[in-house]
Amino acid sequence: MVYVLMGVSGSGKTTVGKYLSSYANLPFYDADEFHPISNIEKMSAKIPLNDEDREPWLDLLSNKIGEWNRLGDSYLACSCLKNKYRKKLSLNNTNNLKFIYLETTLATIKDRIENRENHFFPIQLVESQFHILEVTKDLIRVNANQPIKQIVNEILEVIK
Image 1 (cartoon, rainbow, N blue to C red):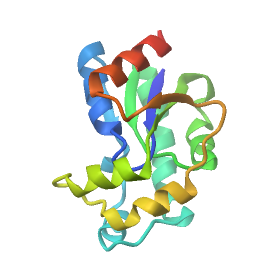
Image 2: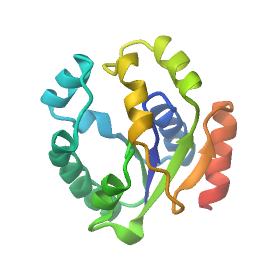
Image 3: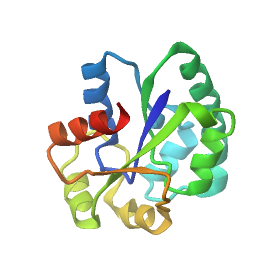
Image 4: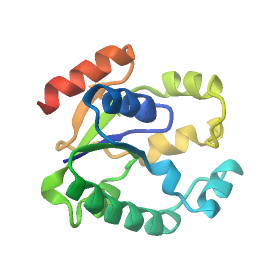
């Protein structure tokens, strides 16, 4: 099973994923590491990605999820803001993929991103992520405004 930690930039996907990976001794992957350089350059220039920009990235991730599933359980940090992105990742992985939505507020994210170092995602794009975010009933929802340890414990309890 691949557990996808999803949400807007700054919601804690990577931090939570690394904690979960360490705790459970399972692999962790960050979808940002699979973006083509053109996407990173675009976001660094404060230009939001469009669906066309995301298409090859999502295709690659869907294939990787299939590979990771064959190896066992793992965690993936990936924004997956629109339902159609989640469906694309699920295409060949339907029964081996769960989405865990790290739910937070715009104010919290702005504060986190202003204080974050060494990341290509600029604060100017935060609002665009909230505008395209689609929360569906099938998501496992976790409050990301609590301490990391509580978030991790809540996720571990839910996925048991």
